[in-house]
Length: 278
Image (tube, rainbow, N blue to C red; front, side, top):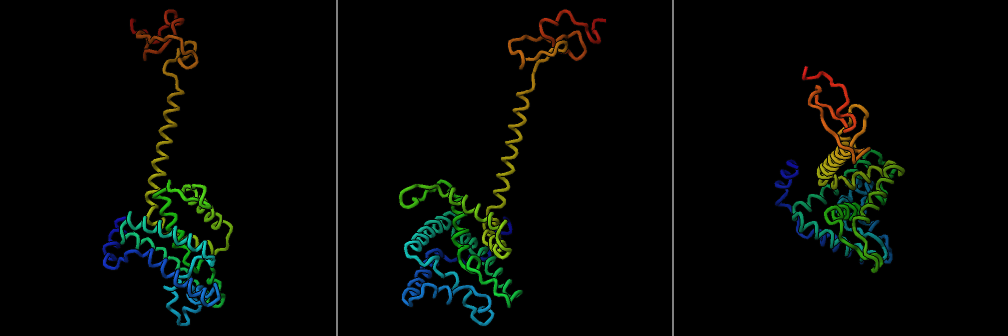
């Protein structure tokens, strides 16, 4: 985190306030332009992060792909923008403008670097122009995961009726990411890792400390349970103890070495070990 704070100080003069609103406005403009043109995919084709076209000179795509609308259906698009606005503003208010910018910047650089790097290594295949990777979906994904981590009890009205805690939506998202890491092609695996890289940078240490603290608590509980199952008093002669016979009484013989315990039945008729009276 020390390196992160140093990087924040260097980038502070370049922090962009209300970056969430700027991204939404850009996507709205691109959506309207696509609707006017009559081609719902016009924005994606003209602005998307296609590495082959970037290397052909269309370098603006490394920025404009951030303004590709999330979906073509206006109702779902409005829902995504509304949710993104709520979560993005909450993170900016919680972290401050600079840290929120940095969070988005790390994700942006990871995805852009992956796509352009893959396009440079495999220019003929064109396989890095994949919608799941060459898009701005990582912005909403990483913002959703960060928001759910900080505000797990925030509730969304599913279908405008059913309140659902955001933590459950995040859990489903994490399960989907895990599924992608296991079963998807390697390109999607790399894209999945890149899309949550900023989350790992910001929350990885905190998650590790929580897991370690939880592990220590579990170990302590196990030790306490083990001690609770260990009898405090055990008759040296017959083995009766305070757990198997909770009503039994025990005494310790001061005449024996180590002062062993005996139940009342064997206290007075046992042979002393290392009789101290001799």
